[in-house]
Length: 163
Image 1 (cartoon, rainbow, N blue to C red):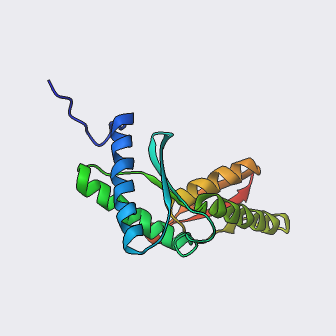
Image 2: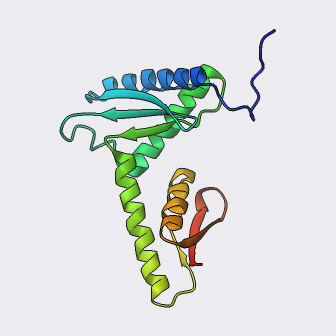
């Protein structure tokens, strides 16, 4: 008897590895078309396929801007969904873009905390992706702040307060 996978079932490691393979094939083709050199590394982390693209020098700088990474992530997820028939929550890191974005978000949270220290009752951050909001929630918690997300779709943003 075959097992039916529903939307609420967590993907298996094998399914996540397949997602990573499909994503890597798609990205490799894209890099070839753009004539950009890069090495792809695949991993499974915290229940998600993780694909990183790395290169010597600044060969990936054109692709590592946050908006570009987000667009490539969405295209890659669509390619995976088209091939596997399942929604993908894969993570894409291009040239260390995830670490760079985390540092930018830490700076943003620190600036918001300074406003709170100056007497503001709350500080609103700009709209961002769900992944970035999750990072902000984690950073805020590490700094002793309360964070909540408000808004819908592309307007969803995080508001920070003191405890």
